[in-house]
Length: 174
Image 1 (tube, rainbow, N blue to C red):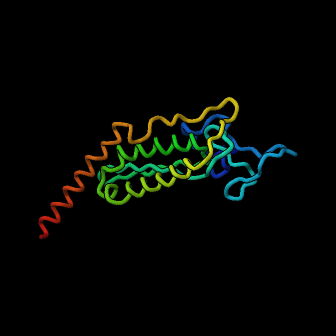
Image 2: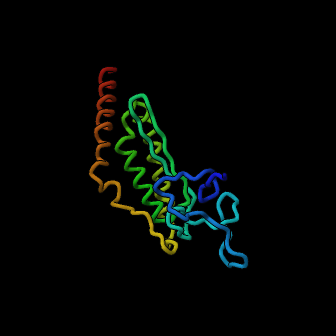
Image 3: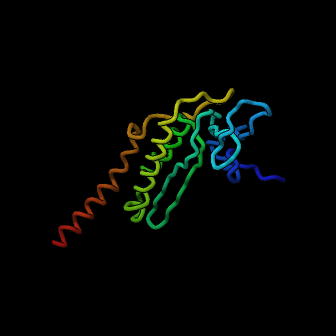
């Protein structure tokens, strides 16, 4: 039995909420004028894995969870179109802001790096021209921007604690 593959042809299908049914990328029909400009040297068009939109970028979006001494790293590979990419970036950044700070290494290094990575992803997806989804499919729901979601401000708790710790260390060393 063959293993299902990721829509871009890079490894097994993840089966997560972003893999829409029928999102396999197929080569253009023989004699078709469809572009043959796949990413990573593949002779397939780069289409959004969620909605099938024709203007897509193959870029990874990340999330990080820090829990005291344990950590969890997540990522979701593209390609995504503008709307679906922004939806994924918003969801994973929001989750990172809420549950990514709760470990010492996460607070200082890993969560900030994840947020910077997602900022780069946000800029890449935002720079794309809007594209229509494939027939019978829809874009992922982008929801409100991250900073308009009240729980995103949970981030202030660990950040305030980190600032307090730094000020205590500085005041005791002088």
